[in-house]
Length: 219
Figure 1 (tube, rainbow, N blue to C red):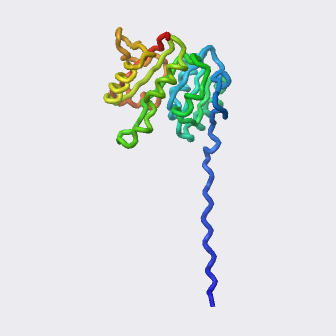
Figure 2: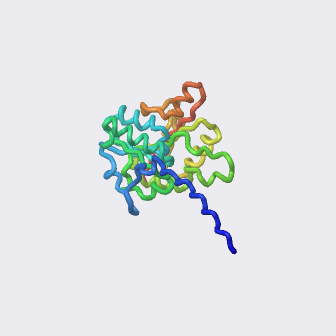
Figure 3: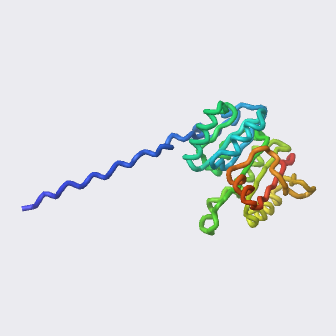
């Protein structure tokens, strides 16, 4: 006679993520940047992290509107909520998005005055390089979205990354260096009156930060 099997223990229900409702871009193949924020011009920050830069930037420049993209839902949700609490939601939003997938959906072409990327690509193992934001897709989309004369600003505290970025962008026909010295993208200081969390820590610790700026040349 078969014995009855004891009932299987119920698996504990997985708690929903408290950041499951982090803000996302509207659905659809294309997203109009002017429907997201309002300002005299629009800027994008790729990889907002804990949000120090975007918060300081909209406070320092009341004419600017800033769209932030942050792959970690927690930080996208927290920073976007903080902007709303400070009454800045009309001019600044942060969305839980992977920039590599999000940038091709944004428009119209030439809608941006500036694009920022602070301390990107913390991927040191070769098998992780596929996760890097900086690449041909990023540069092509930055070229499409930036207005003529629009600025691309990148900074890192890793000298090898700075050299690699500088060489890669130098090979792209859409960008010209716009640093302190003619023909160089290198900047001694951050000119935007706002610092990312990591930049602030690097400055406090006396670590060198490699700052670079390019402008979008006319086609």
